[in-house]
Length: 383
Image (cartoon, rainbow, N blue to C red):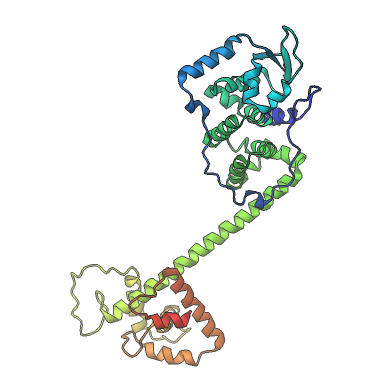
């Protein structure tokens, strides 16, 4: 197990003097845990609210231990000296621990179990000046997160979460930090870790932290696997809908280009009474060039019957789709428009429903209710 895991697991013990312990394991993580939670809240940086001279003064008071009246003992035999009044003001938990009977000329003593002397010293110094060294934060961010939760120091807790967000959270430690965030009641950090695990699931699932979680918390592993499967299914569904919309947009462009070719003429294809010039400005319709080739093939193909030629079959389908979108077949210059209109009345109910669904999706995708070849009456009848 990595050092981060050892720190927060050891700190779950309770000493004889009533030191607080980490809350019990919260159980499986349901997706509803994250609903309605916003990750946009910016943490309070206490160091920005105090001038440098003041922070330096409080830092000196801590470093020199002037008239310190509290001795904080750590597991490795270290002692951090501090001032009871200041600790009580900074942490309600420490305030409760320091309510001891007054003894003449004797230091009050408390113990912080499960943390090294250096980590405890950085924590206590933050209570004085709201400052920390960047290197110390990088080294003790996990310990400081646990301490800030145990002793209810919200500014430090928010600062640790922000530092993890800014780069200290990696695929190697994200599983340990995720479990720690659940234990320390840090939903913003939990959400951040959860998203990172799902985004980098393959890399995270082979880390040491994941293997430890499999043995210690199999229920949490099962919940993460289910979340990963759901996320993958949603991703595939999003891709499917995007590709589907692209097809509908291409069909819409093809319908516009088809009307343009037969009504206005384009390059070498168009009505016989149009005077086509070689140096004509390039056509603005994206699908026009492809339709020109398809129209040329359709005009010269010997098979032409539906099913006989795949290119002709595609042209028949485009003409059929156009007839369902066309507002007035009597004045329409697209070939066979009126014939397809009459054919629709004789079509089976199943095919008619399938075509109507396609038309609805095209209209919904492009929102072409005001297009030149449609009228509001046609749109309303389709919907």
